Length: 86
Image (cartoon, rainbow, N blue to C red; front, side, top):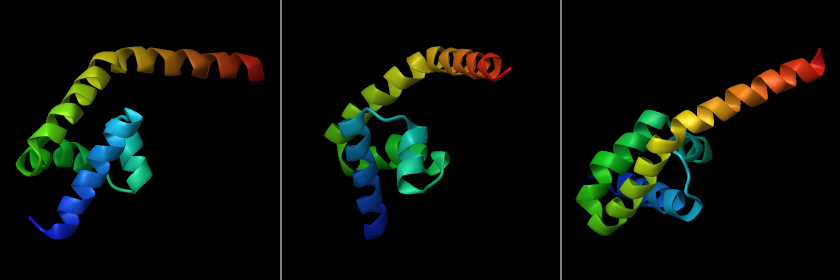
C-alpha cells in the first residue's frame, strides 16, 4: 500500500475515533467520497493497525444502529422548517 494512502487511512481513522464521526462527516471533512472512507476504515485499516480498526469498527456499528433515528430526526426537522416558513 502506498504511503499517502496509509497516512490518509490513519488520519481518517483517528478523526473518526476522536469525534465519533459518521462516514459522511469524515468524508466531508477530508474531501473524499463516502465510499473511499468506508473502504479505508473497513478493509484497509485492519491491514495496517488492528487495534485502531477495532475501535473504529465499534463506532461504525453504533452509527449503523442509530442511523434510522438520525434519519427520522432529520425528516422531522425538515417538516418543522417547512411549516415555520409557511
